[in-house]
Length: 380
Image (tube, rainbow, N blue to C red; front, side):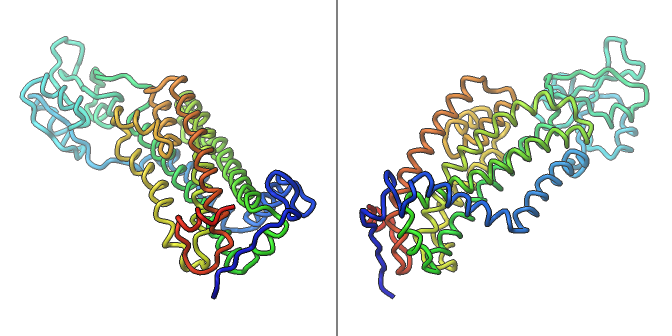
């Protein structure tokens, strides 16, 4: 098979003029409408969205799914409470003194500590020390409720924080991977040679813009559904108090997610334009996959490391999830989020312009895989 190159004549139009009697923006909207309608007709699209919504309710209503295993408790003296802790199936860690026990809790090496009460406030003779939220099972197991000392105050518990971080990271991963649809659509048009008909009436850049706009609108719709479903899920799970903290984070997540998707969309389109068969698509997806998976794993692994999260919140590819997480944790202020959002918008525009050149240079080459240098050289 030889390389097929189709050049648009002046009569065919350009992105600044007419294309077969259709302006660039009209052509863009026609392509976007076609892309959106084709995916809205797929059962898999609606099933995937339903799974996300059901998953949100499951994580809120069934928090035990995310339980952390056996509870560990540091004990200083207090031999009388050991049978109670053993009955609760907790791991008992010996501590030399109260200061050591408190340090173990602060370092999160144990979930809580039971120490002697020297104030006379406790009828049980002990106090419970925890990091940010009282260990309900241990407190209840001790019978008469002992005094509880919290080393850190927080509007949300560690468990609730972990769930919210997980939700934001997973949503970024799912919507970011949704860009695969752009690559598959592009390859299908090349493989069936439909693209040669399309570019005779629609500018290549309008074709790219339409795909990006269409799939961005689909992503926006899904993000809005999630943003509406999340508060409902929290209320259903009895976490109404968490709404005041989660809603601002969701408010930031929507624009960050949309710009993050725009940043990745052009890359997914280029990924599809570089090959001519669906079977070869996997060979060009590596970079885009890494840029989607990387932020997911980075946030999951370093969500409790403020320094790393600060850096990630200003790196365009990870900012879409890292900055909303920092806003949720109260580690960032509004001007930081605005600055990060602006940086992400500028970078998304630059990547889209760069991707448009590669896309136009590779789209009409149908002989196997196209090298990036060759796509750049053949761009109009």
